[in-house]
Length: 179
Image 1 (cartoon, rainbow, N blue to C red):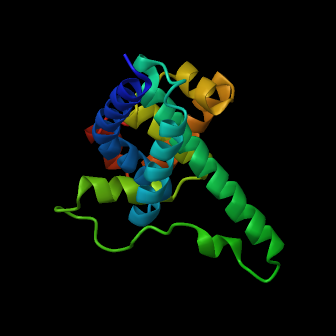
Image 2 (cartoon, helix red, strand yellow):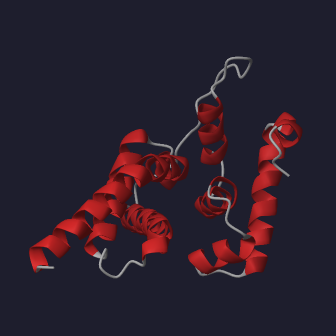
Image 3 (cartoon, rainbow, N blue to C red):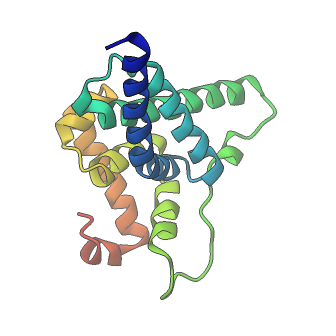
């Protein structure tokens, strides 16, 4: 097999992976950021970085690699934003937070919209941990490993985040299984 044929096969494998991973990566980015446009940028960046490392990515670990890349890209974005906010003394940092929409939360509320609004009220760390634990269905140990924190931190942060959700929407704990 020639070099070009090997590269072509590798590119096809990545294209197939990217097509199948795109919706879930984009949704994860949206859950983390609360912004559709930013979510698309984050997911695209994660796929670009995954492609750049595609030769090193093990076949069964492509989703994990892309997800970790996405989460780390979002963390980097937040660090850069915080640095700019600190550097700008006259700016109110809270003005940059994603604010949930207000209004009547009766029947007809789209589940996705509700989830994003609930997540927007959490800290970045709480949001990351809940998305990895409950959307990606990772174990506490896997979340701790992926974020470079202790299992105890995952447990306590999850508990605090879910307590905040219970505070604002106690009905979700029993109906959605968030406990």
